[in-house]
Image (cartoon, rainbow, N blue to C red; front, side, top):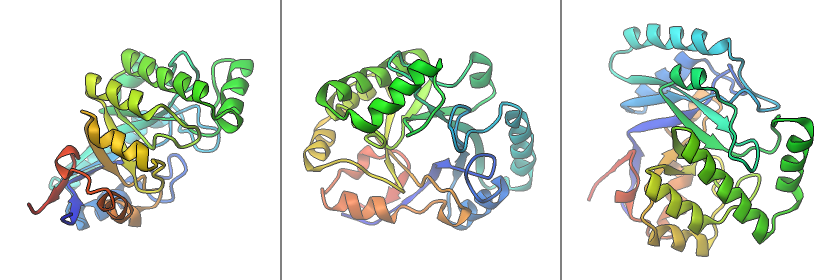
Length: 243
């Protein structure tokens, strides 16, 4: 496999959620890494330990608009890492939220505030302790329902916090044009699941999931992982490599 580098990093965090760097810090490193685009995707509102506030969105938009003028050599996008909240496919976004963003990525996290105390407790508890085939299928259906209801661009770090039916997810993502992420902090696919992804029609994206600026644009973990499977690089939308 040829070495590859990112052309755009669309999964980065700042101190607006649980990151340690500013938006500008991330942008500067992205430029140093040779990226053409960077997306700021702080955790959604219902993330227990690091969710942003809705009042942060206009502040972030204004900041990005100003930085775009300062750094015209790179495209700066405002996204969000939304949280899947329950089996109905609800996420922590409203229509007005979506209108304020350039794009949405979606993941499951270990602790989120769901819709209602009882439903939230059940969803989070089962993600911790009920990793059964039935539960994985229900989680996959939850992803699919969310993709049908919201303009999701990427499913991030699948199998983190709880497993899913990888074949079912890949099929749905291929049909709906949603990308599957190979994450810079965590990749939880086994050999069989990787072969399933290779055999699918899905497209993929590399995301650093950087929580500090120094990790923006880094993809060594993904490279080392994917080369073990001779993964077809033309299926990854945000990298460049030598043929």
